[in-house]
Image 1 (cartoon, rainbow, N blue to C red):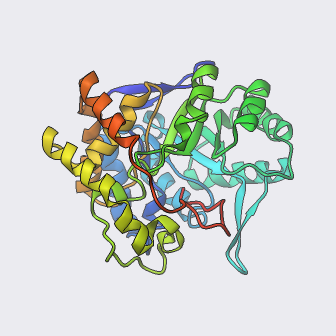
Image 2 (cartoon, rainbow, N blue to C red):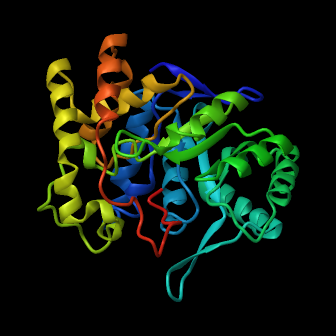
Length: 330
């Protein structure tokens, strides 16, 4: 697989398509068998993936343990991204934002142990903590970089002003944000700022949380452990209203003799050369499907036609419910 660079000041070279590991143990139903997921992660590496994404709160903790176990034999051949700043109150399972310097240091040590490594390639603040100045966060990360525990840092789902302020203090390598044909808000202000500053973008949910694959219909029933049960866009009436997008994606797939998933991922890759999507997978078929998207090509005319059509579509339903805008769908 080809590679791409995230960031300019201190570039991080990774595979063109990464692997989001969250869904293997968090968020999309009951956790998968650990041994099977270890095999799948190692198979991803065999297929050319060198960029793996996790977070301490996925599980919590169990996803980092899975990734660490899977990648330990090939640690020096891959790049691992994980995140700090969201903890889980185990009494009521509510998310708690906490990016105090002492908490970051505790999180780093825990992640290093679970990931079975002495350094983290890319360390994101999972969500901005309104109670901790970004200057304090950047200063703590800078200290950890000097200690060799962190090689690059980034922000996830952060606002434009926070990104600018953080980057001015300690250059960011990447920003993680939801971005797909199903959620194009980053095109308005985020992408121009990242391009100006030389920061890479790592889109999570590039398949629209599964919607763009065509496998979800208004009759789909999500399990109680699937966070999409609380997402407005996945309510029956909104799924039905948004099927126009799925039908369009399916049409492009037929034209190019590829799958809808490959359309969605390859479209992202064509938007900017510094975009590295991290689709998740729990099956070998889906993994191979997603990775193959890196080989899809478009003519300028094809891409123009696709984007022109996307501009005509209005997506119905919010991506998170109003009570939980910090929802970690990633």
